[in-house]
Image (cartoon, rainbow, N blue to C red; front, side, top):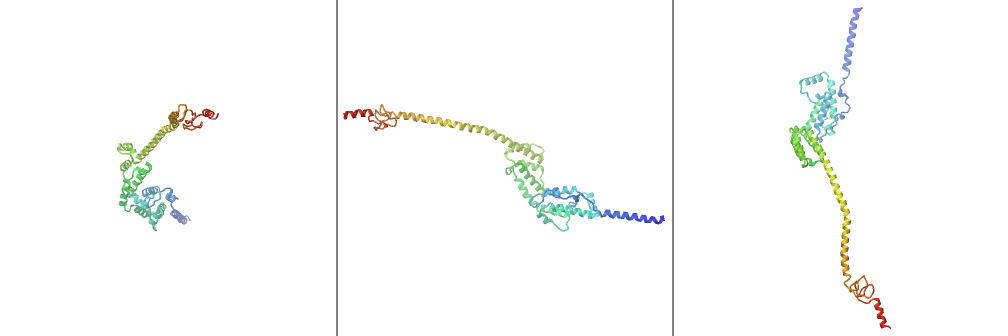
Length: 329
């Protein structure tokens, strides 16, 4: 009985092992790349034809691929051991490899513009082939682009920008674009270009940077330049506020002195005229205030009329009465 039961027990054990193995093989394997729901939150740069952001986009994308250990889906490993491990995974678990490759493709499709998407979209494509097509779009005619970018880099000066921050941002962007076309700008050249494009107001800062050996890095020189600009603006504001106080005092004193000067001038003018008129009013007879006769008492004119308002040379009222009594007794 026991002999006949043993093979049956072994058969049951074998079938259970086979079932467990089949279940584990059928169970999908989890990978961290499958948990990424919105890649745009991790790669916030959208690659466009005219944005010149390929270097930033590709750098962020490579970081994302390294985090989830899928960089070998877009760039072949240079190390022989890493390359062999990638080939083994692709051969031993092709299903997982294909799923991960599709995830990387989705990341690229989601972080490029609509125009670029139309140019790179291919049926049954692989992540590596898509990556190479995108790189070719931005490395095409790289020598002509390098000449154009070099010209822009050499002719960038601070006087064309509103602040030192905007000026340094432009230099950094141009240097990154030159790196995209295999014409990388060294730190020494970038710093020298930064100080050579400054205005005469920064002559002291230029001398200060030139005295360093070796030159500071571009981020350090940029930080010091922005600090120098801030110091100059504060100094100019203080000088402007200090110079405005005396100007206001001078303007106020001038406005207060103006009525006094006008008053003095008016008095002088009146005195002169009054003296002259007084002299003219006594040019007439001896007893008259005018030019006319001796007996006139008028103060209005020196004419020769007979009325009392005109001090002429005629007779006064008493004389007219005496004359009238003599001729009309």
